[in-house]
Image 1 (cartoon, rainbow, N blue to C red):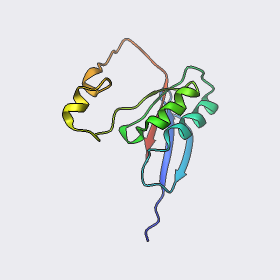
Image 2 (cartoon, rainbow, N blue to C red; image 1 turned 90 degrees about the vertical axis):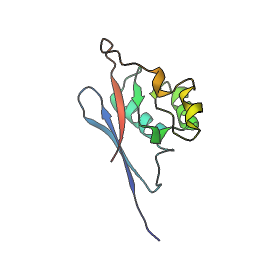
Image 3 (cartoon, rainbow, N blue to C red; image 1 turned 90 degrees about the horizontal axis):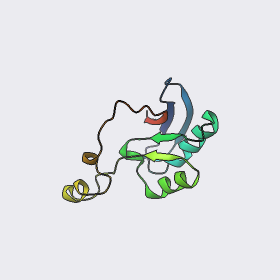
Image 4 (spheres, one colour; image 1 turned 45 degrees about the vertical axis):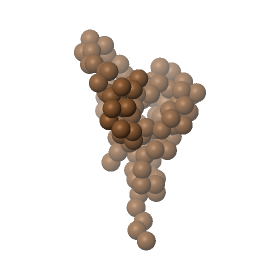
Length: 112
């Protein structure tokens, strides 16, 4: 049996300060979004915080918990469905464009 650890780090998007950390024995990040978001919200004390994370954190259950806690999340869909279905989904990557005029303070979850 192999025992491994999965570390989590939340970083302030403006100053790149580490604001929260955690270690899990799970081999995935699916159940870590809310955990890290709520820790970050408590540290940063920002009522309008936006959490961004990679697709490894995508879990509708975790996103719902964040929404219920007043934390806006931006997490891309995981590639669990056929490519055609993802490209036509409501929140697929090809439906987002970068707007350099809008500056948003957010916290990023980084898998280390």
